[in-house]
Amino acid sequence: MLRVLDLRAVPAEGDDVFTGESQPQPWGRVYGGQVLAQSLVAAQRTVDPDRPVHSLHGYFLRAGDSNEPISFAVERLRDGRSFSARRTHALQFGRPILSMIVSFQEAADGVDHAEPMPSVPAPETLPTVAERFAGTYGGNYWVRQRPIDLRHVEEPLYVDPATEPSTRQSLWMRAVGRLPDDPALHAAVLAYASDYSLLEPILRAHGLAFITPGLKMASLDHAMWWHRPARADDWLLYTQESPSAQGSRGLGLGRIYTRDGTLACSVAQEGMVRVPRERLPR
Figure 1 (tube, rainbow, N blue to C red):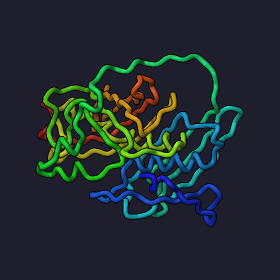
Figure 2 (figure 1 turned 135 degrees about the vertical axis):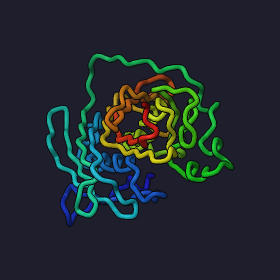
Figure 3 (figure 1 turned 30 degrees about the vertical axis):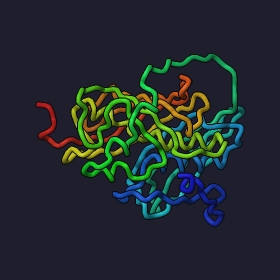
Figure 4 (figure 1 turned 60 degrees about the vertical axis):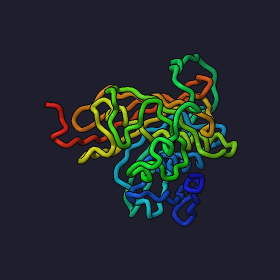
């Protein structure tokens, strides 16, 4: 993960153009969280470090090929007295696979409140993905090496549907290794991890699992707001819900808390969720 987030400048193509590689994926498609994080890193390279990211809004336009490098072209939209705005296009084969606007802000005082963190079991009491699926059919697919340790509070939906339908779920997550003390990097890793599982409450609500025959899912857009600092290598609680699903689209909303209950980020994503006709309610 750290290697793919270490983008290289491409001076021959412009001052604000970068390139990066992709993590190999068994299906050959770039993981959406990876290209989100890389696009953020590209934008961060063009902004004063005293102005950390506070929000991003991106659209996934095409599936990326994980076997090919990705170019990131940054447009400097504005540098004001307190805020800076950038647009990043992630490009493969001359076409955008992601278009994203990112906003940065220098530190400021103001009113302060946050929704409290719900009470859930501690991460140490929950099994890892590897422990849940060790020795099961197809288990190797779900326990392949990942840079983020995910521990669901409820049962995960990789293989079996939920035993109790619900539009809500929670999971703990953290990077599997210690990260450098760079706030910009931790913000990028949070963007990377935020794409995991945010559409799962849609499946949980309708008795579906990821391996449901004929199910097709894809992220359409992604928005994220950073409220307060957080380390991505410490345990974070990711609470998720889906307020609506319709028209082969579903909305996922999430909040990311530090272990001491600080609300660090809010996340929203709409995804395409196409279910075989015979699975639809009648």
